[in-house]
Image (cartoon, rainbow, N blue to C red; front, side, top):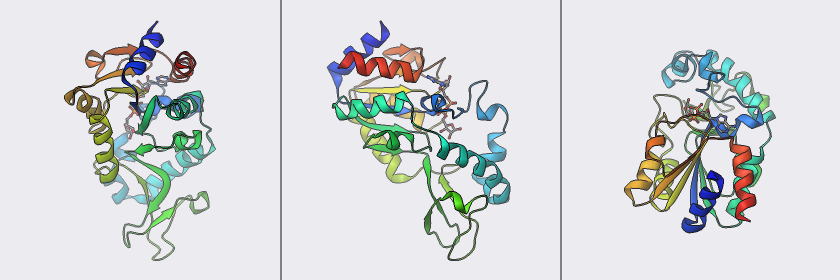
Length: 240
Ligand code: APR
């Protein structure tokens, strides 16, 4: 029933914008952050995921990130990613704004993907500012080929500003759609969690597809409590 209702909303309000979080990639074998089995259940985000921690001890953070990057590059898109790419091709989805750094939306064929928390595609040199492809051959401790400094992955750490162009585009998309659909996020982290509210401020509404509660359930026009892969696959089938 709720997938039918979501399809109805999309037909009325297309093209919609989709905002994804780690829950869209768990069916690719990538743990999320705040589920009981999530990454932050075992690792303190401030100890391994903050800019201050990276600046204090880059080698320690790379020991965590090198394993994470190997896992992410070994993962494959799942049916949630493929369904979103298909819905974009058919004109139902205008763009995907993602908090995920795993590149799976692009690899599944989505064309407009706004990576608001950066990605594992590149790493930058804190000394000479140059950006370099983050090739696995550089692991476990990527150094700048020009000056030898330890590179920083181009992902957003806690305490770090989001890439300006990406967050500006995300806000522009959120303002410009009548329906934003959140998939697989607790909506706990700002400023990204403000995007559904930006859609509402601009006169639109948002729906949530998530396993379990999110911080904005009470403000959503529809809540679908289910798995991203199954729900989005069924949605693509129902929309035809
Ligand atoms: N289908 C639907 N929902 C799922 C699935 C699934 N297959 N798997 C997990 N979920 C849900 C979880 O229950 C949880 O509510 O997805 C949500 C994921 O939430 P988080 O783990 O908080 O991930 P996210 O919202 O993306 O985190 C945002 O926090 O740590 C930072 O930078 C990190 O980008 C991340 C940000």
